[in-house]
Image 1 (cartoon, rainbow, N blue to C red):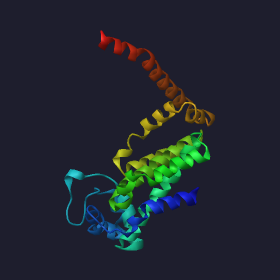
Image 2: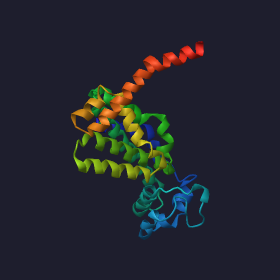
Image 3: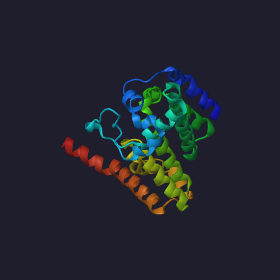
Length: 239
């Protein structure tokens, strides 16, 4: 499955390897003194994402140190050759695809269904900007760490080390892009929606019994709303 998914990623998005630096790539990479000097790598944790050698956009003072750090590491290996930066993006997307495959299998899907889901994720056009545009790496890193955090949570059981790993990966996602913040809500929704598969997996692995009970309670409440509250609401409007 892995070679096939890698081939799909390369066939669908590999053309981006021939691209150059465009738009935000220039201030974030080409004109950034801290990215071009590996000795200043630690500065990514003390400065804003948009601070460059020339200016600082105070209206976009995001904190994304892992993204800036990855640019610095790419520059240390490739210099200002855009191919290397694009290659990193492509490999990050492949890693996300493999995590989607893992989650699908853990959710109870068969090997074919899980592969089809991961394949759709691999080639879906919604990913073109994030993969082909170097500055789109914020999305790739945040997604990678979010998916990894979810896998660590659902596969680690009661082992405290896996729980800490899940939290650490969640923090890494936040340090890549702020959009990662809803992960706890996503976990609750996923567990409550897939009660016959993922919730069973959670229970079998004894992942925080209180969380599983709370998720079941949420699902039961939703069902009651569908069966009772919605009917009453519609009756009120029809009165």
